[in-house]
Image (cartoon, rainbow, N blue to C red; front, side):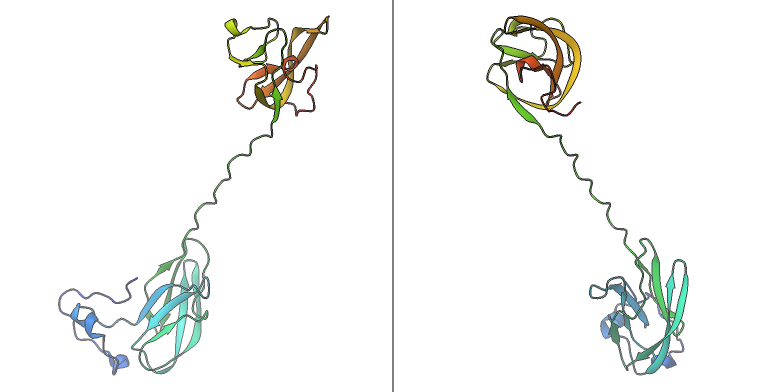
Length: 225
């Protein structure tokens, strides 16, 4: 951040009695700058929240400085300055940690440039956790597999040739995230025909009949959808 003020054209003569003996650095003079008093450099890495600053051209000995913030002024505070230029990073300047605030300092009525408290980046949102799944092998001795459908559909059992969803052959593993009761379907349970109502919801969002995976009319300990 620039703390030296650029003078357009030729600088006018001014009373610089307080700065006698502390001439401007030759490279800045050659670039067309005139004496600046204070540079609010940056935020301290050693003392978080405090500004660092360069001062030059002030009266040797005791001076006073004032901290300016967006919501008001604090000070004055005592400041002992050596002869020549000095850099301060001591945690005793001006401190502000309110995002978006502007901070600057005056010493003996001479004002520095402004610093702005950075706004921290938004906290990253962790990806949604996926529900745990249990794996089941499809097992249907009559059809040789099962038709995974987009809804929990009862009634007709679908074979591979008329499956309107995803056909999964016997022995293939299916990941189930939850269970839910739904429309009834008829099951040949060891020679006894029964109506079962439970389905498993797969990790892919399809539905499979409980009779084709855990072979029981219930949730098999899975969470309910």
